[in-house]
Amino acid sequence: MKKLFTLLIAVSLVAAIASLVVAGNNAPPEIQYPTKLGTVTFNHLNHENLTDCASCHSAVQGIEAKQRKDAFHDLCLSCHKEQQQGPTSCKDCHVK
Ligand code: HEC
Ligand code: HEC
Ligand code: HEC
Image (cartoon, rainbow, N blue to C red):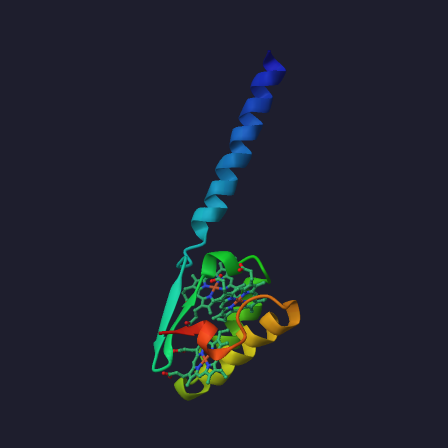
């Protein structure tokens, strides 16, 4: 009985830590980029475990506005082509 109790405590501790880790990620589930060609909808939630956080963020964050287009296209398209998953044509990403 005592062993079971200890096990239960251990399990709930692990669950509590896991939920803390999840709550610590304050990323938006989805980010929309309205452009002249149509809106790009980036599902952050579906993407955030595909590679490490920093490899995406360092590619696009803190860069000049006029370089954003190329930086995003490089980041998003290189992975979609490599993995042969995810949209690679303009109108599949920029949706009117
Ligand atoms: C596949 C690429 C990718 C991965 C992997 C990724 N992110 Fe992001 N994340 C983005 C993009 C793109 C943005 C929006 C940046 C912008 O519009 O300037 C973003 C934005 C965010 C934001 C909103 C605030 C901000 O800095 O713009 C948070 C918080 C965030 N990500 C957390 C995380 C965490 C934590 C992880 C890892 C568990 C992660 N992301 C993994 C691409 C990614
Ligand atoms: C590390 C690889 C990787 C990167 C970087 C990446 N994607 Fe993806 N993307 C995928 C994969 C794999 C799928 C297909 C799996 C799925 O649908 O969840 C996908 C699917 C998508 C889809 C269609 C399904 C959905 O989730 O909405 C869109 C739209 C998309 N990506 C947009 C983007 C944009 C915009 C960026 C850049 C900010 C980006 N992706 C960066 C791997 C990546
Ligand atoms: C994988 C998704 C994806 C694909 C495919 C894609 N784009 Fe983009 N595009 C984006 C994202 C994300 C941005 C960044 C939007 C921002 O930062 O405001 C962007 C930005 C742009 C911009 C700048 C928009 C503005 O209003 O500042 C133009 C123009 C553009 N793309 C044209 C194209 C063309 C043309 C193609 C096809 C050859 C294409 N894109 C394919 C995701 C994509």
